[in-house]
Length: 269
Image (cartoon, rainbow, N blue to C red; front, side, top):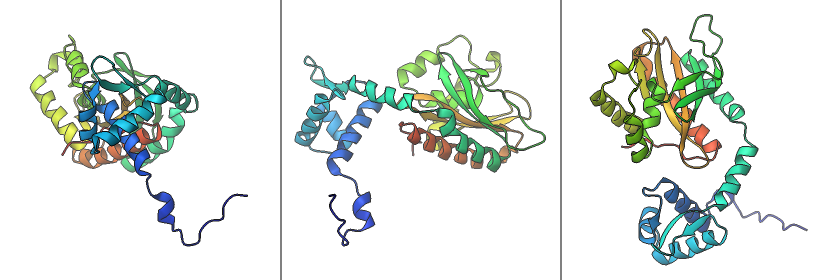
């Protein structure tokens, strides 16, 4: 017979965090977000804010289940292959279109624009889900449409939160489309836009890709902790609404990232 609930227990008792589990979770996130990918015990504990003895015990436990692996040579830690099994199970039972659908529906109605989710595949972003709302006139986009990875608002949002090495490699490409045709690319302008995106959480495109069409986008992460794509809104809305819509897209991207097991790419103060 299951134990009876203690009437003295409050709702807060059930919603409180278990310290050891919370610390283990933060260690995994620190390893996922850290640069370089292999991290020392001291750096991990400093990042999480726990004593080295506690961190060592948690890491040993995670290592037992292959969620973490330790290099015998460098004495550093990295994420382990055991996470691949968990991630594969998440993906097996996850339809990102179903997850994104209510978020996109709300965005399209609140902005009177087209909202879409684009996922990265090599050097492109593919539209995998969309909501065009109920407007008679607006921007139409087809499922499966392929954008260059460095295209407009979503390209800026994605590149802003890539690991530094990946960002440098991408920006070394011969043709970049952040500002329309590659001939219009302005590196100094992009640097300013990336800095602003990292501060606010979203990037904007105000008519660069097509005159009169504006866009805002925010990057999203997947179960592996990597940037996997972006949520975006595109339409004919006035330019002065871009910051307000950008905040809405950022909030939706945060919700999507959490639902698929990722951690949203937080803006920097």
